[in-house]
Image (cartoon, rainbow, N blue to C red; front, side):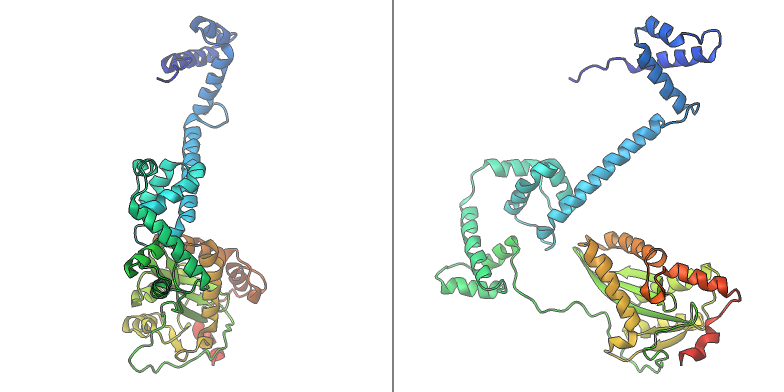
Length: 416
């Protein structure tokens, strides 16, 4: 049973109310705190503090109200818990990345290594939220019971596998590790090697490339290349470039589509998706058109340049460009230089955000980060190509010196 409070809440409320009322009456104001404190058996200084806080809560005195202080304490507690959860997820990313449930022994070993920093119960709670079902009772039971014959055998075999893997430059996969073990006289099943290598985080070298984001359309494409690698524009909304890139998360690949204004390097539209359907590119285009329209700018006649990806040659995408009065332009197939500015942005995006702030849990986790990154990129990041100013500031300077509205149609000849 906890220790009793020095003063009951009812007594505190009554004493505070009496003191506040007495201090407001000139006839009883003098010595009110000492008098009421003596009558109720409360230290006058304690009562004074209660009265001050009550006056703050009622708005008669500046300061932090009780409700605000409680909310701040709750927010600080929530922030501490979120930071601890993020730290746990980062330190556990080695066995969370695979997607399959890791062996209990591996999770127990992780908790042993980090229980002093995070505590057993918080680690189990965060891991359960991440899909790894582990309870504190499971951990404590695993620590108290003797190791099984299989776990002892697995530990010995894993040590041999790790030795073979390390001695061969860490490039062997399951097939070659299994073959090497058999050559050395270790009779172990291939499925056992696969299971233990996965549990130990060992894998062979791979030369697999990332997923293709540019799949050429099947029909004939008569759209010309109006840019011809000259990525310059005399004003905003004269030339936009669009492209799609990919990002790795724990939940799988996430694809990102961007639309960029060449004049200022501003990201006018973007979208994330777990698939490469036309909606991905179309949503980014719609965001760009809406953003410019919302700001009062005319986008009719803007040259929209992209590669020949199937998303950009789709009928719905082409029709939307026509409805907006945009002029379609495409580069040649398999030539990144024909869309170099968009490729350069993708490289910056992945270096500055994806690799720098990762790893990422899923598309929801990444979407918030991309929104913050695009806001920073447009409004605060300094760009060397436009004089070390942010894109939004560069556009504002242009509009201050060019009060007459300029349409993209007037600038079309400059793009040929």
